Image (tube, rainbow, N blue to C red; front, side):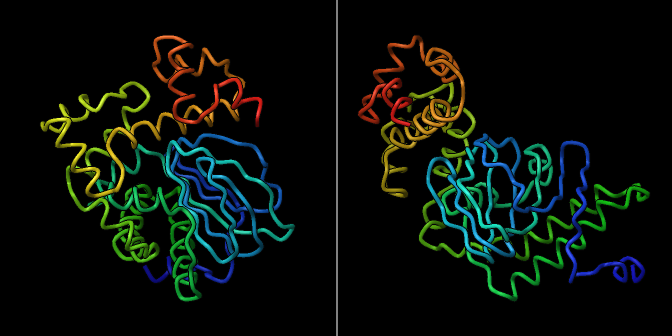
Length: 283
């Protein structure tokens, strides 16, 4: 143990990339980062240590000024919009399978808080703690001779989650929204099924309650109805695909389980005021 810690240099962030299968990737951020939109398949924790950048997360634009922490969730659409020449930082990428395997308590609530507040400030003490955690994680990940390497990493991430994640995002006004277990489960189901299921009845059946009660409960805790939350997920995905992919409108409609392009067009126009074609041309 003493030998392990003696090799940790918290003043120097390693620049080499370390990966473990498709589950974990540790890498640095610099001004060579490409400004191309993409939909994430992994969760990514980014620590911006110098410089500044602009990026869109699910089509909402954010200004990032170091030192700040960015938490990106699987399924979010990310579009870098530009950065300063001195942009620097480092990142941890985790697969959804790996996160599920960790079985973190309260994860869905924390997920929604981070999903809605992806960019947070970090003071010097928190930055130093994150540096130390990253250095330990990096040393554990690069130690391929350790047969328990993955187990070590799992437990390091659990310690980080238990000891630090909840304190990094102090948006209390968002936390109370998801304290109801039924509402938490509703958001979890919507994340999983919104591409295929748009009817409230489907989610109410899964939760063993009536659609009317589900709508009432979600409205009381979030200020928006269940139907509005489902629609916002569908429209966000549609807007992202229309804006940043080469898919035809028919292909977008099919990917979101609409019976035909005409039905999709009416649904999209009712929500945005534009037809899919008009929206794509406007961008």
